[in-house]
Image (tube, rainbow, N blue to C red; front, side, top):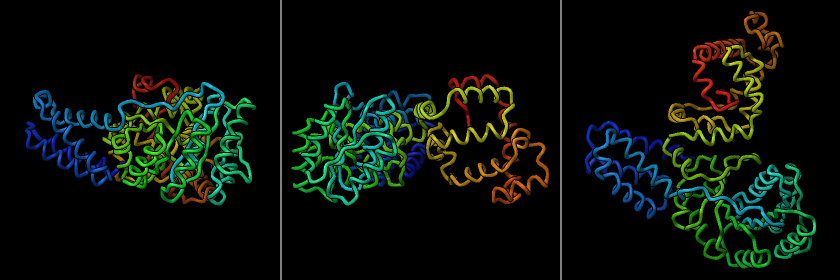
Length: 440
């Protein structure tokens, strides 16, 4: 999402890195570019103005001007200010420490409320809680059915009542949870295409009757400045406890994420980064700031790997890499594990330095599917020993996978180069990886 902003900021900092001595003038010139980059990214103009003033005041200080590498020192100042702008520290959701704990989800129609309810339910289920998804949107066509389908998909209980209004449905759902030992109730409330008094009155009544422990506003990051205005209006009426940003995997400019905390004073607690039920993560201001500045996010990458990858299998893979004995079967296993972690370009962007290197390269998921198809068309012997693949075998593999012989040759060549690369890597570098973590 922040690719355009990242590029613009990188251009501004590149000029500073090329200057031998920093002066107030070239710092101000760079800050002017930073301000323009923020405005183009849809950051609220007051937020952009205050941000640049704060950075400029610190960047012209003696410590920066006399630093051995003043350009990097300015980047650090910008990073620290971005972290402060986004909220300094991660704000957790209300703990599920009483039965039932109630999460009330609100927002405009189309912002992704129902999908977020499913993600929250799955997340709590994985932590051994018993969630209940409540269908309180009786106005949008098929909203109740969508929630039921999603609940069945992730294997959690859902609640709905015909002929009742949303306030009654939510009230009865909490009573049901109390009687059935459910420890988390997730209320999927109705939205509108725009904010109106009727919607707000209904939400105020639901809040008064259910006394939610967490009142989350779902803000669509792709709506730009409107997301900030919406968040402010909801907070003024409902006193929301936090914001969940959705569609952060889209190609919008992303300024809403940089403005919401500053304008509303409400913390961003969650980031929805994809369409899968598992594509939800806590919002970490420091990690998001690092991503925006193209520094990667290795901590989130390792956490994501630990959640989705079979660590025993990865540990065996690491040992094979140390001995340079991995084959196509191992490669196929790693590809399958990698797919579980999410979009490939998103994963690569978390690796420090890689995001900038691949910014002009289109990461095509179909290439992975093509490679998997070719490998699956090989025999067990061919996967374990690619050297036996001659011309006739290549033609058979190409025909079986629906690819050309050239595509098979390309994969074999890439795999051979990968084997040599890992063979040349020192064992100390491989052993320096987190335990059980594969570099694929």
